[in-house]
Length: 236
Image (cartoon, rainbow, N blue to C red; front, side):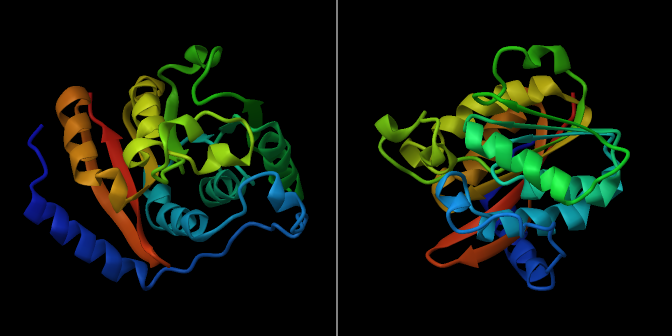
């Protein structure tokens, strides 16, 4: 698969930034949480809301039947996806046990009917998830993307939601090869990145090694960082 050139990537960034200005989707109910709850798991923030906008824009066109969120946190994104597409089944994984509880509460609070739902505690696609390979149509991934010292990576509490190691890529690089095993051919990954994660390098690496077609779907500035949602399609 041909590499994405820096000039083409720059055009994608510009188009994604322009498009994102028009997006503001409705969010799932989150009123069952209070500020004390958010000291235990990731509070929905700019990246969560950008992912919801990206899913609203693009996911319905793929009509996914089986959706998985990796690192579900509050459950906001997986619940939003279920409301958008009425899939047959949804799965959510998080290494933080309090995030697992929070995801289940959000699912129940939004009273989603007719969709099979499973939520598990797991360090990324850990032991036992091999049984799902390759059966998932769509993966949602808001990884720990903040550049940090490598020793901060790998916790099981709230720090697991943001500590990304060198270039913010340690968890991303560990997760992606298994995500390609998990997805069906034609399946889609929606993933949050920041510019520090070197998204162009990431897209071209996985295009060359795994036959994945990557592009920037939406982009927005949040305080001192630029957030993007990459859309990556498994082509083989």
